[in-house]
Image (cartoon, rainbow, N blue to C red; front, side, top):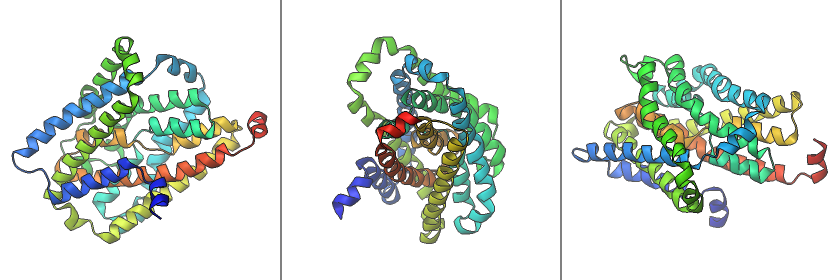
Amino acid sequence: MWTQFRRWVDNFTLTLVGVVILASVLPAQGRGVPFFEGLTVAAIALLFFMHGAKLSRQAIISGATHWRLHLVVFGFTFVAFPLLGVLGRPLMEPWLGTPLTLGMLYLCVLPGTVQSAIAFNSLARGNIPAAICNASASSLIGILATPLLVMLIMGAQATGEGYNAGEAVLKISLQLLLPFVLGHLARPWIGDWVARNRPWLSKVDQSSILLVVYTAFSASVVGGLWQTVGLGPLLALILACGVLLALVLVLTTALARGLGFSKEDEITIVFGASKKSLATGVPMAQVLFAGSALGPMLLPIMLFHQIQLIVCAILAQRYAQRPAATEAAN
């Protein structure tokens, strides 16, 4: 049973759960709060600097011309997903409560993933160049689109009366986009080193996310998170994440086939449009939301992240099992 469990739950997810437990038992308080907040800002800057250094310009050029595919994926990521969240809000709020429902809405406006979307495309034999281009562009578009969508569909209820979308975009650009651009500009000098050390550098990515989660959940726990989120809402949240993912997977598959895309393009659309980025969502939440509001914003992303990994791993294996003749025919 343990072996089967470990097939679907990776070490990072287990560590993530451990960090949430640690923050619940020993949250950062008092003088520790400024220290962890400063460390978090530095870790996030390093995270996006390394993402910029990893990005190949050749990969962008090779995949950028497939505009129909990108239009479908971006349409789902930044239009259909938020619309589903808005339409589903009246159904979710009685079961989840307002804070977790706002977290679901925040989940819906996030960009797609990079690493896992490309990995699943590779496993399923999808359109890899288009997947690389699409996933990378989604993260960049999200830096601008996500704070604007937060203001549009969540408003002051989640962000506070003084929230300004323009200031949020500027703040995110300085904390996330600027390190990303600097990393990409440094790629001619450090690109080979980054490629040789990918396994080790992935630990830097994960450590940054874990640090943000600890800092965010510490503030939320001190603010009374677990007094307001019980077992019932938590189970309802898991169900809501599963239903949302299932709905998007069905819609993207049907649309890709209805528009006559090849099987490889269908795979890229399904995996690109159905994913939401934990790696981008956590740092952006740190910038957009403050204090105890962070915990409820992060819970849906963390749960959705694990559910999408499990479900998409199964889908990728099924796609990979298709005969070569089917692939060629499409």
